[in-house]
Length: 173
Image 1: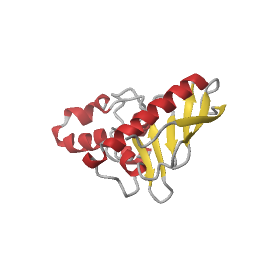
Image 2: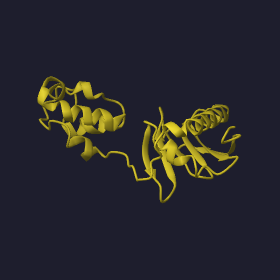
Image 3: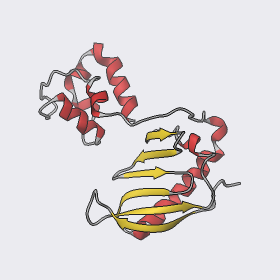
Image 4: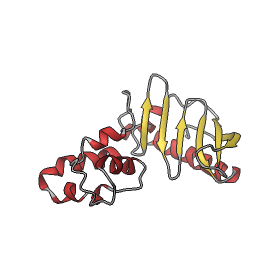
């Protein structure tokens, strides 16, 4: 038995983050309150607020935010792509719901890492060997998924940095 029948496309708006793309709004066929804590366990979640009942995922490109009664997805090519994404999201929600006994629902707040959270785990040598002008610039690149942890040579080469590297990799998914 499926949790959700469908998510209807209800509106398209111009995407301010990327001209030429759109933001889509969708409405699920039933409220998503029960499934949200299980969806919050997925690796691409960047923010989960159980009090506000909002869940945000990073997608390439853009973001997807899910509320109990609406969904927003940014940086979409056109309405047809939006409909496809909403159908895929419906399938994903149903798959998570079917596997909920194997998951531990997340009941606490989860937030996206900030540049300083990432920077604190870097060696902070500003060695420029990664190609960035500073470790802070590298941290921002990591958050924007334009850089990879392995590009920080001091972090990768020093065995004493293994725990920091593992923490960064887990934090960034």
